[in-house]
Image (cartoon, rainbow, N blue to C red; front, top):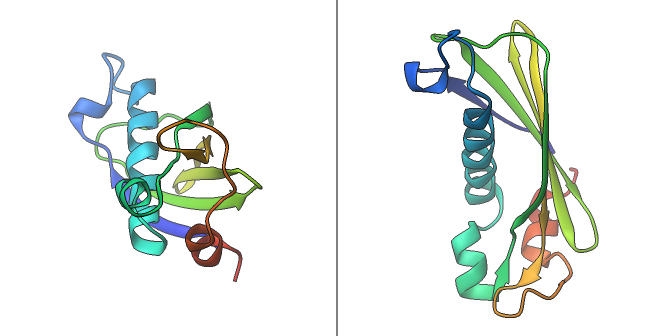
Length: 130
C-alpha cells in the first residue's frame, strides 16, 4: 500500500540558502506519517488510549537528491513496511524528479512499560499490502 499526499514548501521550511532546512524534512515526514495513520489505520493517540500501545521513532534517516525550495509542491509517497514489532515508513518526495528519500522506524511498545509488543491487528489489517 502506498499513501500519497503533497507538501507545499513555505518560507519557514528553508534556510538562508533558500533550500530546505534539514530538520523541517523530519517535521513534515512525521506529520505525513501521522496523517497516514489517521486516514488508514488508527491515530497514534487513539492507539495509546484504546490499545495501550505507543509507537516511538527509534530510527530516522534521509537522503537529499535535489534542492527543495520555497514554492515547490512536493509530491509525497509513503510506503509502510510491517515488521513483527515495528513499522518502517519509507517516504519519497518528488518535484518532477526525486528530491529526497526518508525512512522512520517506529517501535511498537506498551505505552506504560515501553516493553516491545507485536504490531496490533488494527495496523496490520489497514496498512498491509493490498
